[in-house]
Image (cartoon, rainbow, N blue to C red; front, side, top):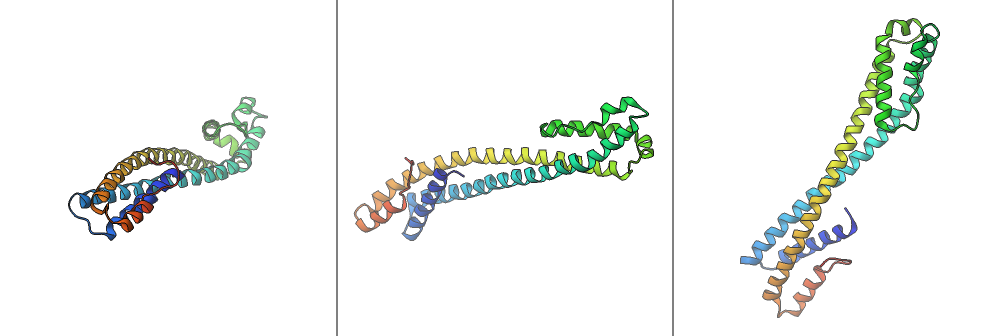
Length: 210
């Protein structure tokens, strides 16, 4: 949540607290109830926004760990066995080249899956040249995890972007509702200087608002 939105919501909470502390009835009570609904909605969207960011960051950390393990351990082992097998079967040389370290995540996943598929097709030969049969299971599991992190990042970004857009819309509705309540408070308490001073302080927000 950006600073402007956060300040707006803090202001809305102060407005809500002011109105709760003073007798409200009729139109003012109805308007207050609507403001409370909007604040609850904003809180839920802010939580969704934060969850999206956290999920995307977590997936990024996990993805880096998986790529490191794949590049330096699992795929390197497979490439080494493939190089030995290629001495007798030269056409395998191109099938077991390590993906470039700087290739994007989708490109890395595609290249790694290609190596896995070829290894499964040449399993008997590769095992005879020193490959552990367990390597293919470990490689499959790691690639599935890597693919899951890509989907988790996409989902996290969608949740964050969607919540951010909805939060902007709710913040605009809150602004309108506070304007309405401002008129109602001035109508009801306009003659009470002390209350109007407290009201002005409560609805004040630093930075752009109106």
